[in-house]
Image (cartoon, rainbow, N blue to C red; front, side, top):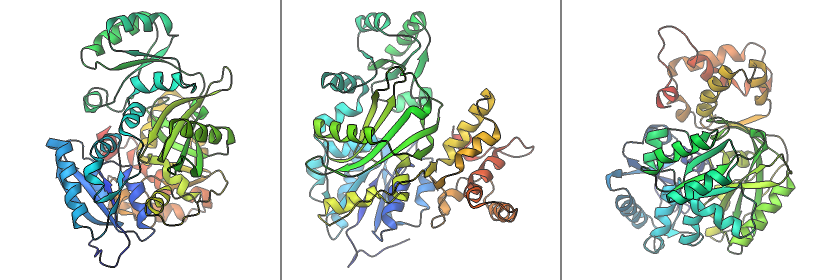
Length: 441
């Protein structure tokens, strides 16, 4: 799809649009009739590029070679910015892209509107080995954590941590993803296992973190999404609860639900002002069942989470708030109360087989989570191609949904049709190839 920018609203640029979370931003802005330029990388980890690129809300697409990632990405952004009639609004889609944008902000500011915390603060927030000591020193409640950068740190961690515990990298880079895939952490059961795990990882990943497991279920994990002014004042706050995630217990959201928890909203504002955060911010908390306190698991600044679209369904379109604020245009954020739910079809499919094998859900119990489902990560009635791109047999989807819709299903049941189709297609049937999400897992 092409779009002429002459006489159009200020364009938005999303980078790197290979990331599936870019789709939420692209759709949110496109629905506001904002021209969206998507910048894609061509490289080894671009399996979602065709999915995102199929969105009808993309006005123009540009591609850079990921072989020299930072240099080529910045050169591409400079060229895109120079081609725009006015300064554009830039939306990074991943931590890696956000750090590169921040580090090159002086070059980019001639073409883009940017609102970000200092580069040093961003690096601290995103580096697990730096963030937890940083937060603890400022009185922010976090899980008990031991950064590991030398052999003495291993001894200290083994003596001070409770078991079971988790080990994770200071920065989950491509080397970690190649080795461990979707796993963000490694769970260890005792001191001997911890020692062996750290010895194995230390030679490959010098920056590591040993951390306690905060007691509680996945439903004790709450996330807040907000946009902050230059004075760290929030322009709306949205809160949701994780219901399921993949990988289980320590993964990305697969099903989340809107909740009203004023305490975490107040904590979000307090922490944001204390740290001087600006722009978009997400804070993930987990309620410690031992004492009821909310502990900060991570802070994500300046790039949207996959499930941010649920806030949009509740009336708080954070990409549009971001866009309007940096352009000094009036915006009145509103959050409608309710129990709306969001699902990631891909992660939910992966999570289904895990929980099913462990016997943690009945089929009825699993689908009861879709009662309040209002939004999908991929499926959208006004932008269907990204969902179709991941189906194993796209030509059959119309017939499947038509048949199901005429079986007298309720409105809530009908809202789960795309996911029902997805699960059906992935089931154990003969002569059927697994769907793309399983091939990518």
